Image 1 (cartoon, helix red, strand yellow):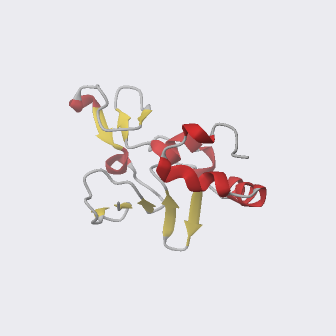
Image 2 (image 1 turned 60 degrees about the vertical axis):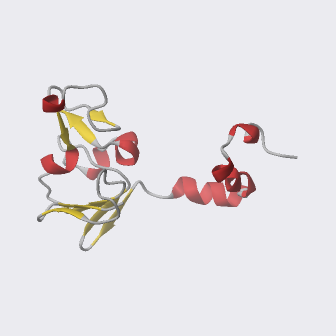
Image 3 (image 1 turned 90 degrees about the vertical axis):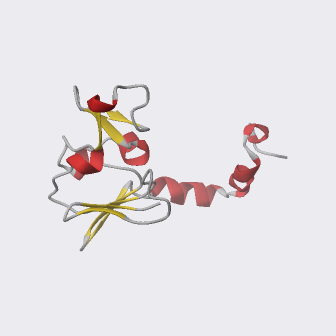
Length: 123
């Protein structure tokens, strides 16, 4: 019997229905950020206004791409309907102290995007 709601998944996500409970439990225990001797690794980004890794919003670490300058709120896409001058890429605002390696870098086209000493993005 197929898992509940599996008919709603796009075909490329069908593999998810084959995960065991052990697999799901393991995935849920994984950290949102990896701390390494050379820096930290995060899926999407870190909020520049929050220097502590432990206080970061998990949603931001998984989805953010930019920050609205007026209030520091993180956004999933680029401007996302906002005026371009009111939005900035989070990586350009990150001042450390950790060097951050992050994925899903918009516009990277498969190459590395580096902001010296603080961020490296890749897609």
